[in-house]
Length: 490
Image (cartoon, rainbow, N blue to C red; front, side, top):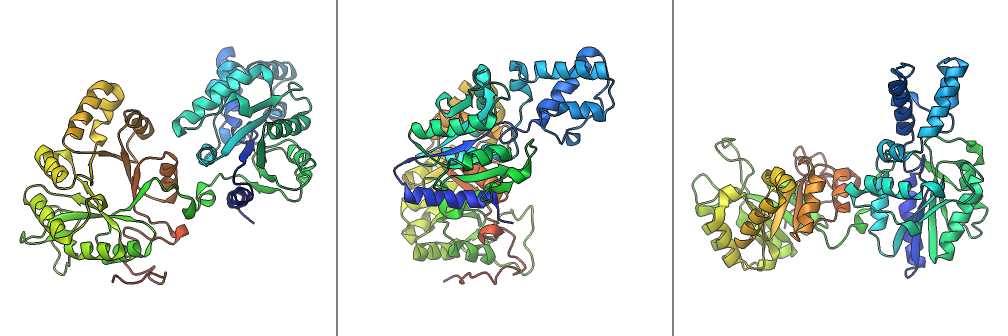
């Protein structure tokens, strides 16, 4: 079966090619399409028990809810709740399910859908509209709750791109969907796709799409209308998979991508054959203190192996020069290492703009960062700041003073671990201060694309992405993937 996210990506690109100057619009339904309404159902029923000192729903789990939010009566019947109590519960449910509190506290998005919306919102001349069966009376609550959910992902929804059902609660919903699309079209938008969980709504839209320009996508979650009502051209899916949506060729050009840990021949060959411009190398002095070598672990932590061979930094510099690629040096030691680095780089003739230095503050300290900044003013000088997370989030003024001190040393970029708690809030705060940020420790393609959606200045990743035919750090050690067309190092 064809993948609906891949189909969406291709249809979007086709529409962009045909109409490069027009405002393109992707339209989403909300309930059952963006929002998993099972959370709302579960919350309201549990709240009934709490408010009435009953235990009808004490064992009810999210996985038990396989029905639409308008079909709660069926559950009450399955639980064999007596008629009068069942009516009382249902009336309570109807009264509370669309309250402001419920909308703000119980609505949860389907996994991946907010990232999909974010991707389209950062594309040129591309917008995301909402076309819902909800009535005008809850417009403000709807916008407030969706923007609260989207805040962490830098997703926002605006009043002008939200169309509510003009006919009222559960009235002429399909007609309202058609009216909504026509409303957007009159506003100057070219709609390239419409996503809804109800087959009847998709059929209604198909009947007004004379030239079949709108891709119809069925969110195959929980829905009321019959599946046979789906138009024949509809694509169905239930997983919002950004690894199928975002191709490598569509990555934003203003984000720098760095191939992490190219310390061995396997990863070096992979990097040199890739489209990635930057590679990161862990640099140390060899045991004799004569040469700069590539090795992640210190010799104290991991003693030298009997047949261990090292790649020399001088060799890497020649390869990068020949391939016109840039390099990031993770400086694992202080002391004589910095003097040797400056000496070797000077002899190589590398341009300052093609260099990037990373080191821990406690290792390089102020004098060595200043030395690098003086020798290579156009290079990137970076340090990790994960250790400052508690201060940044709790005492931001004090944290900014510290970052300003580091900037005075010549540091012009700060690095944040992808797995740092509260990473998104941390990134947002640093961005507000105007500092450049690098995200690192990105383990897989999905995490990489999620990082891309945050638009940091740079991303350092293992690039172990088989879907893109990249096999990064550690993946090639047993020669398993060398049949992939990678030329040997020059």
